[in-house]
Image (cartoon, rainbow, N blue to C red; front, top):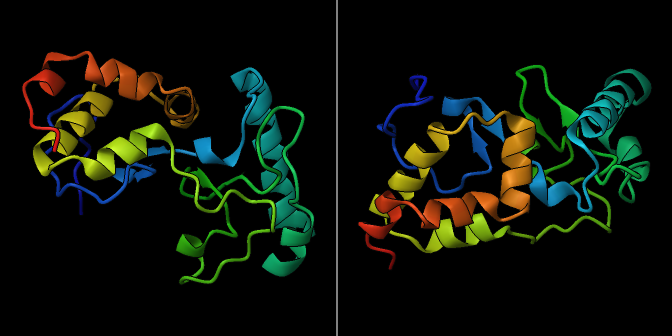
Length: 168
């Protein structure tokens, strides 16, 4: 079991991605939308999506047929909040033992700049970014917006921690 690393140096193993960070209680859905409305509107939309998913649909295939497109608040119709508080897509292969139920308009191969940088960096720089994330007052929404807007990665690259680590 991992420990709660909020506000502490990252001591857990360094994950391969930063999309889901259960040690910090964070999940990013920044790749599941664009042209974001204010967070309160996004929360309402995800609440509605969640209700639809759990109350109206009997299968992921049927739900997938209704998730084409992005809502007026900028979030995909398939993004929900799971029982454990994480936010994401129930149609994503990571939630379905590798089976992909997402619709054809999903940006399946999209990677935000934070993830692109993270994947190129050595473990020491990754660990420094994770410690930086742990020090921020993020929730799932602000974490997603920070990744989507590039403010997370830009902010980290301005820190002493970044400047004193290897980047290749």
